[in-house]
Length: 284
Length: 284
Image (tube, rainbow over all chains, first blue to last red; front, side):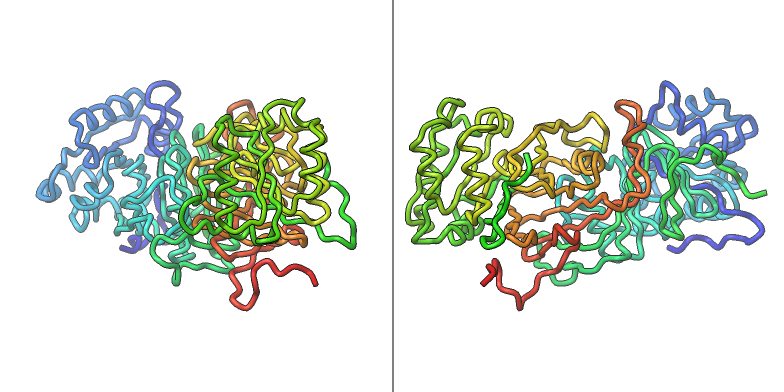
């Protein structure tokens, strides 16, 4: 699904994939920034815990975002497709100023939300300025092409990744999470070289990419975001490798971005932290 | 230690780091190629099993290289520094046409061989044309700067790698082994960004880089060799990162080379497999 059309007058909302395992007890830097972008004391945050099978997931996030000063937080108890037709949920999303997708299983999330009114509302709200954050499975589903599964600890190889259609908030990137912790470079390289149009974002645990309306993201958290850019590949054996054979991919660009670094997804260019630049400067 | 001087008339011998876990029972493609480069039926191969604590390591390789048609194979039972003064061993190395360093612990290898006559002989024989192969620990020790240890599953970080002086057959690269299998990209990125002069070679299991006298290597085996080139870094937080903090490294180049791919370590350029190019073409 392509991103919902953005009104030239209204900048798109932040898209905030988080690599999972983020700090939810101490500084809570990532969640704090999300609450701030959602309006702080004026925020009306809707949590979608559908990826998780745990009953406490929704209430847990209610507590976290309330502690961080969000004006209002609710979660949508969606556990099957029929729940997505609930008109109350549509109404809650219509007034949401921030939407949060929890971790769990991204295929559960896409299989339950895909093509429903809830998915449509999330896309439309984001297109008119509402920030959408997601952690782990909730990060994976944000892109048009979603990493549904695959092998960790694997060299790049045609069969080591399973893609599925995601929610399509962005079609510029493909997102992998728990990146360093689960050794997922191989499968992200596979994904990027399937079609070098896609920029691969490998997001570590406790780390987030805050993708702004201008398609520039900034890194917040204790780990890194690894950016794989295959657009200058000089050789790829992707199309003629035998099944299971190690791929050859020559001419990849790699940027490892720690906190404060920025990356322009349009220009495919990385920038070091800039002390003179305020975080999350929204257009006037 | 810098590489021993090479006589312009006599090309240096192949340097053959192997990522560990190579096939030692079926095709034995890597060992077969090493025996061939060592002279096949005319070969006189000396195995150095010092990295290993297992008594069978030396005899095992004797059997493998004999089965593959090597004219003569012997191993040097070196388990302490005093063994390295044995004049018989020096004589055996003086007539060796191929030298093989087994796996085990590379610090054991460097601590026992370093600065001895045996190490000197290996370096000098290689400089006048004798191929030297090594697997796992035996691969690590080949470079001037040796990966002695470090963290797997780690993002690039100042403290995640321990370097020690190696045998210095080459000073162009730093070699890491069991690369994909043990998720060692993070520490190799750290090493390459300590000093971007060094090219990082991450060698997978059952895979070898055959580095020719012209400093071009070809990949043989079922995995890949990942080349990290940090020479075009536009930003590195290496020197001012706080201990344990995730590093930012912007502008890395990465090549993933499968079997048959070549890489020119002088020009820092990767080449796809070339069907018209014979493997291991030695200068006329």
